[in-house]
Image 1 (cartoon, rainbow, N blue to C red):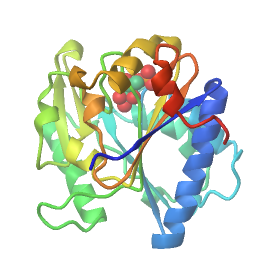
Image 2 (image 1 turned 45 degrees about the horizontal axis):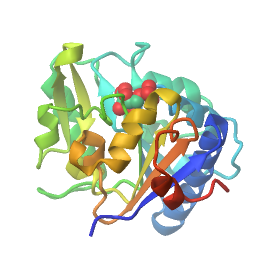
Image 3 (image 1 turned 180 degrees about the vertical axis):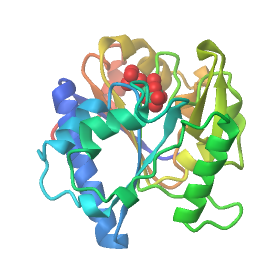
Image 4 (image 1 turned 120 degrees about the vertical axis):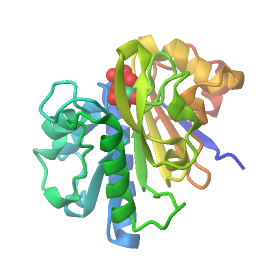
Length: 257
Ligand code: 6PG
């Protein structure tokens, strides 16, 4: 049965990041209590930077930084010091400021020229870390995702081959509009996770958010993210939610965090 998606509408982006930070801390604490570690796949783009900075500012106490294992949901085909790098953004906003163990930071080695080699090596990192047998998929405790203006998420863009991947964990996905490869976790991996949290902020996302949440036949990549046995959280701010129907807004959980 498809998971019940949870939609939360926060008054503004500050409240959105605060709510996400509280959830991040609660999920981390619970996972560490249960398994001794918290495995999270970080999102790229600009939206999550607000969350990463807030987490680094220690606004939410007692985050078990030493027990958190960091992965990425996707990456651009650039070296880690490139301003386009999702790793670089998370490092500057958070990882360089908090007591994480460097051996627990698993970035995508996107500096390699051979795009397939990048994807194969990261898949091997995941298979080793999660001690997977052939055919098994990793279960992240939390996957952070954004929503692109075309309905893409991670680097799963409309009309691209990665959307049809059933076996691989990570692929090099050619994105024609960028004339470049992007590296991305595949849908089977995203849908194996215990919790997926979409962060969506800004007026420019209002139309695509309405399409994703209210038009099932749109067949957009972000609509294909449905954890089989996990939570699906949509944390959105009020301007991003401005095009949603009253019916959808009524299903949204009040913004108390
Ligand atoms: C990336 C992301 C991508 C992002 C969306 C939204 O590498 O760009 O992982 O999926 O989440 O494009 O980006 P913004 O948050 O910048 O709007």
